[in-house]
Amino acid sequence: MTGEMPVIFAAHGAPVLLDDPVWMKELADWAQAMPDPAAILMVSAHWEHRPIALGATHAVPLVYDFYGFPEHYYRTSYRAPGAPALAVRVRQLFDAAAIPWTDEPERGLDHGAYVPLVAMYPAADVPVLQVSLPALDPGDLYAMGRALAPLRREGVLIVGSGFLTHNMRYAFRPGIPAWAREFDAWAEDALANFKIDELLAFQTRAPAAEIALPTWEHYAPVLVAAGAAESGRHEAAFPIRGFWLDGAFTKRSVQFG
Image (cartoon, rainbow, N blue to C red; front, side, top):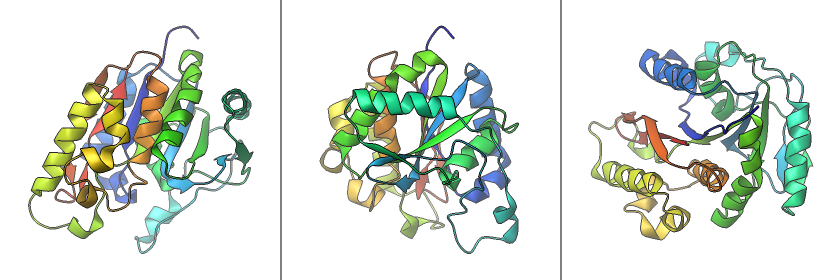
């Protein structure tokens, strides 16, 4: 394949996203506007492992890593083909960058991975490989993305899946809080202008960071995506915007290139 695939960061929602027709359509329209990928490399906020782990390369059950939801959410299926050739290539790239890795061959896609994929590629006909986040160090996450960057020219869509704000204490409270708007506006500027130093040092540079991200595993995948975008086209677009659950989460998603 010639040309260069974009790199994306998608706000992934909880399983209830699957019952949100507006958000589902936004994700579907986004996928249709991008080139068809030969494979998808998924990095979800819901899998941390040191060293970086590569998930299953064959069909295994999904990981229903949530509790207390209605029964039908535990019957969701997404049987995308495995991506063994992509796994070989990822191992090569990590070795070249001196990044340790391991295999977790029975680890299926978690909800941060399969929920957006159900919306974006519902036919489940694109091979998918999920890789874990390493421990939450901004430099390590960015370096991981830089190591994966060559995949863009090989037809692979690199997807970071998380949330730019994530504070469950504010879910379902009426009104969008000021801190959410401030952090979202900061993220828009930092991403649109590719301010890597700002993005890496978000805990001290972003307004209201402690409220927007009491823990920041959901922000981590955007650093992987930015790293993968650095060496190629990295102009940023925001195909999905707005807030969810009355402002506890921003739906802002970004496409680099």
